[in-house]
Image 1: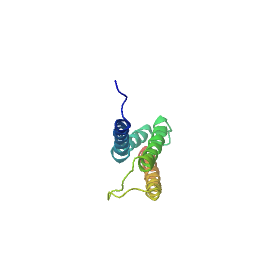
Image 2: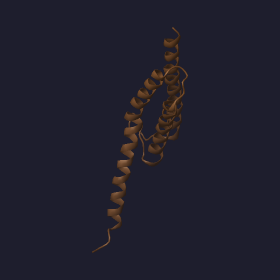
Image 3: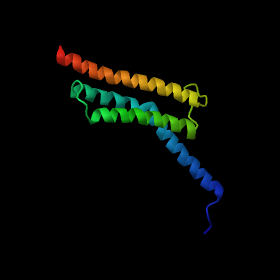
Image 4: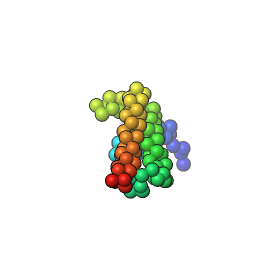
Length: 119
């Protein structure tokens, strides 16, 4: 038996990297946003200002979204929507917008729950 050559090991690493990169991209581009919406819906149904595990899960998904994009850019050559290589400036802008949108959605879920309970 012969040992695997360094080129075959490099090929398997690229394949593994590509799979992890694809998983990260699928999470931050597709899966995280519906998950945040469903968590916000659950928060709304829980009632106004009744903090629960859903709130913690919501914050964790936002944090995972930011981390997935960060790793995608730093380690897996993440791209912009125009197909250009993404930079840390893109990540900072993405993080700011994601945090603002996430906070607004969370406040909306809480606010609607409060308005419907009071009104």
